[in-house]
Image (cartoon, rainbow, N blue to C red; front, side, top):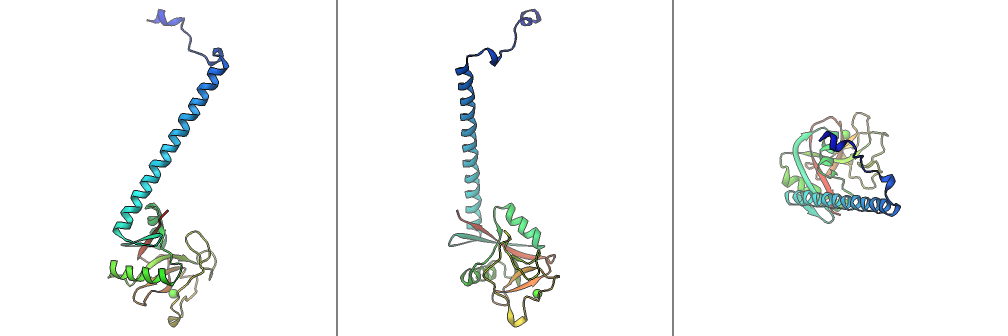
Length: 185
Ligand SMILES: [Ca+2]
């Protein structure tokens, strides 16, 4: 065998006609882009399936699905958990969404008096932003309880079920149940 193979040199592209090399490269690119396309399709199918599971387990409301997680976590852990499932902490954008969240929280987590939502002023005191660091235009503070108390100690926001959906700022490291939201594409 060694004798037979000794004189066989590996094929070299250098000796192939130009059009063949170009063709092979083009074909390789084609296969690559097809694989990429399939990869994207598989991922979007996975996302849709995850979204359906979430929507079935939680509630669907307009272009969002909400899901309550009853295992209490710190604010950041809660948000990371939502992200791991393809969502973020829920962020009510108007009173209608806020009321929907409140009603859903009441039903799905009857034992929780307040739940984390995706609003915090960690970076700049008093500047409340969503999980993407964009300032929130809708807020629903419990002014009767002088919320937010606005200290640097309390930088994360809960929606209080016991206060009819009003917001409180709390210590981010408190353990609380939370609601994730998933945007329907
Ligand atoms: Ca507070």
